[in-house]
Image 1 (tube, rainbow, N blue to C red):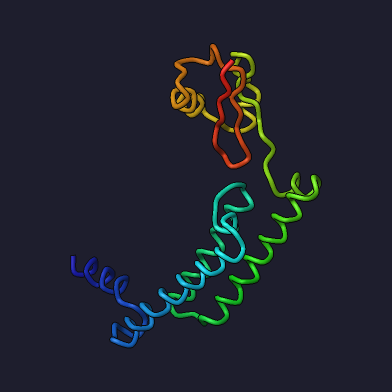
Image 2 (image 1 turned 180 degrees about the vertical axis):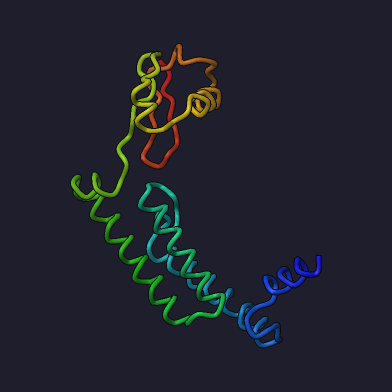
Length: 166
């Protein structure tokens, strides 16, 4: 039991121990980075930190990692600069994807028809790894108890399922 408490104490104690300076550094770094992320999101648009595509999701994870690194004591300036480069790259790629179909195909997932005229497309379900329970939930959310009466159910590029009544 003593070993457990020792390991737990080590996990909950930062390198060098707790200090008022460390607490103040964490608080100020968090607030500075929060403000910085808000400014970047306002400057470059809501898509910058929204989860629309697989690529956008990865950008969000990388951005979160950079913010965490800065908050937890790595160089604030280096992390902020890296975050700016990441946001600029995401902005450029999303702008190119909106303008050119080839870029869109590289970075965005294509929509997949899961139900067509009341018939569940099993191969599309398997290919996109959508469980029948997820499809059924989307159908219920749209007011359907079965695929009957559904013209299309589409897995959108952001991972949501849209349902179009017949």
